[in-house]
Amino acid sequence: MSSIFTFSCSHALAADVRNSRAGILDFNIYPYLADVDNDSVFTLNIAAALGNRFSYFSLLNIGNQAADSELNDTTSYYTEQNIRWQMSNTSPLDLTVQYNMRSGEDNDRLRFGVRWRMNDSPALQSFFAKMHLKYAINLHAIQIDDSDKRVWQLEHAFTMNFPYLSDRLYLAGFIDHTFNEELAPEIPENPIVAEAQLGYRLVENLYFVSEYRLNEYRRSDVNNLAVGMEYKVKW
Image (cartoon, rainbow, N blue to C red; front, side, top):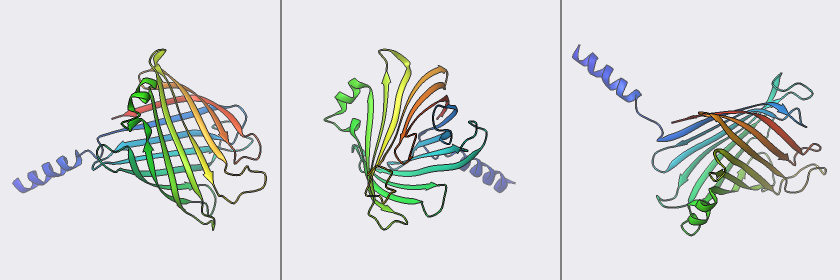
């Protein structure tokens, strides 16, 4: 009986071990799309600070059926899974690995790069703190996929708060700038995909959000506006 009790306690303690020191689940739903009806109507962002200077970030976008009402039928997905490793305890640089998956055939990607958290750089910390801005640039220098071209990408990500206006308000977004892809003639050379989300906290972790989107891979309707709600789960 003693050995059974010991095993049970050990198993319970093992189950209580935390896999991350801090993290967030960020659910976004968009029941209104202004111009592009087959754009994303649901997004899930996950971030976690792991041990030994590792961190994890992922996003999942679910796309709406073309020519259908928002949230009526979803038919596509896009996801990025990122593992990052801070080079030292005080370094603003991270080594990064990203696995990118999406709907369709022969279009998944594996990327290797380095990320610069500009707001954590000693010479720039004061400036970014005054601006209430966090800004990072990720150079995806190596991309492995089904293309023969040597494709590379610059990924920008930012978050800005406005305490002088309201502690409930924020602006966040990204800019993905891809180079050297083999694309259809109608698509601009070195296309950009970008989003800027303005959010206002209504109560606790529930936000009203409005999101401007730009996608130069689309042959028409490059711009879109999405309006919806966001809920964050933090630990």
